[in-house]
Image (cartoon, rainbow over the protein chains, first blue to last red):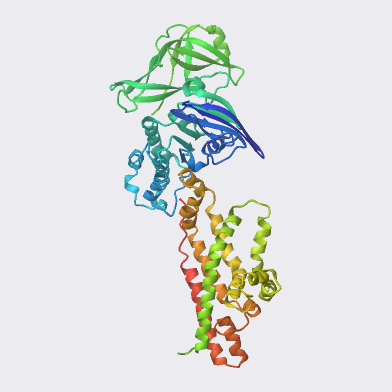
Length: 356
Length: 226
């Protein structure tokens, strides 16, 4: 009863959507895919902005759409953030924020003040939308969606229209949302970085079909259809900063199953972070390697392996405690090592990217 | 006073006619313009063409058909007679109805353009912020289309002030009832009262120029949608 059941069929000239999903009722779910993969259409179906002729949508036990029911957008308890902030030009920032808040019935989960504080826009309230920067406008757009006290937040590529600097300005606020809100968020993105940083679950879409869906770490470590976050296969691990080595400017990040050393990111010990480990940065050995420039060596065992894109390469999934890493080897080295399921290996990790 | 009492009466009648026509057209033109801006029905084209007809039709043609329709044997005339209102030609209200038809496109087209310029996005945003369709129309569409309403109102008023052919066909030339300023000028000229015609014509010229000047100068740089 706590999840979101979504089944939609759309048939448009040149595009069709055929989706049957069960989305988790908490955390951030990323709808990930190229443009034209149907991720925005799916989000619009959930919001009721698009009406799939054949669809069923049950949100935590409430039917929003089925054969006989259609809840129009304005009666769905959603918050929606558009790609461009789309603020009302005839209203001040405060007027924009209050527009939905005063129409929303009863107990707002996130009050107006909390939304203003969360997005850091208190100093902008009297301004007009056209005097704000793109990043500020989008923060107002997000606060406006939160101020209605939604039971679910739908975000359609909220950062796509912004340049890199503005993105960096907003990402920390999105991470705060992730940490501080207890409502589910569905986040449409084609950006590997945003997905790796923000998502707990991922739904990968292609041509209007679901390619893969599940928890982020597990789904990224799948070998049958490696979801490429960016240029390369790899995994994302949830971790905590365990120790700072001030002398060498290094930090130890602890994940379920082991720990890795990386450059000191200048965040305090105990902070929760995410690390990305690319398959090309992981190598395997049978014995404890001798002196090496590689600082990270973990004990693991081969969980499974599968062909990679190139005929000379192999992707190997290695279990380390409760976590999975993916390593890319040449077939020749795999044969020489005798890679087989269950084989204990020393796992060397050359580089770790901290997604803070 | 430079203008005669008859001139002032004609001007006052003209203002009343144009004002009432503009108000009526605001009420019936707005929903039609909204429908034309939003609809994807196939008959949107034909309806748009009918709305635009008075732009190209000679006023006397429009006036002729209206005269037939409102006359004692016309369908509209039969209706008004059945309701005990008599027939409308050569009355002030007959003139109002004719003006409504005559100025229709001047109200509907600017509004339609203004509504189309708003686009889908603000309406979708408002819907996600819990506004019902009626609420959206009043709280988002009307304020965003305000410049369009001002343009449409001014154009309709000014265009009604300038009508002549339709007035002659429907209203004739009854002082205080249907003799508007443009007809009064015609009368002055017919009677060789060139000085009187000059004065009234000058008033009309100044009025028209002032209206257009107001429209062209108040157009502050449109605020971009954020």
